[in-house]
Length: 347
View 1 (cartoon, rainbow, N blue to C red):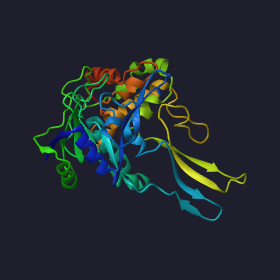
View 2 (cartoon, rainbow, N blue to C red):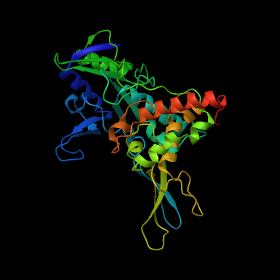
View 3 (spheres, one colour):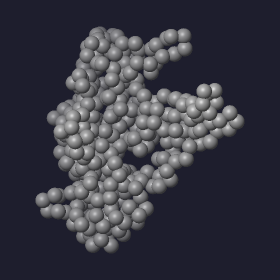
View 4 (cartoon, helix red, strand yellow):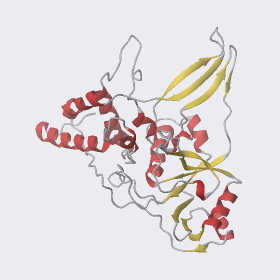
């Protein structure tokens, strides 16, 4: 079901939805970027179309609502534990096609990876999605190469806003929400959410990564260039790494809370083990692990690549490291190694 309606009528629909849902969308924060005269686009709660940032890609992904950077799991005393209270309100998250595909990756890790994570599952059950149409490619995006540029399901309704005409076009998948559009006076129409058809940045993901690629000299560049800040991981919509922290309230260490805290395979300490051991010491080794997990190892388990080509990692890197370039370098190295060693595959 497709509908076209005025901006004012769409705000009426959002007002009705706000009675049952929290609305969570990209918002432009004026002067809250890295410098006082720089804006940042990040997710926050909204109630009207004017608050939703539709012209720019969000600097940070939507995932903090599903996987908070710091989440208290339970409280403990000497004799008992109590699971932390959680918000029970339903939420509609507004996101673009690449992020819609990222939800599938998060679900795979937290719900389909041997067992379902109960903390993620509890939040996921109360979250629905609205698709923001994406009519043009942003800088560093390579969603077309990663096949995440088009989404046909998984959302309640889509949103395309023609600012000049003052009209909103929506592809509505949910019958109850369709009634809200009809009550607001929306006109029925054939609506296809806008989607990107071409990116300036293009990548080729290798089908097979031979063993030699794991020792290839291409990773040495990132030992020299990467400063292991982890920013690429924290803005990525599909990164899921975390660590556990026990916070003690008393000196005896028997009362406190356990938190799940976002972490990163790129930072120091993440692979430390008992006895002083540390896997992937160099920055190049860490980049290798991250890259091959995004474009190879994950797909061997779930059948599709983890990376969705949003380009946020390229946007945020202070050393101007391009993940898209890394993928293409890996593809070139894979072709060369396959020709030299008969295509031996890493397992």
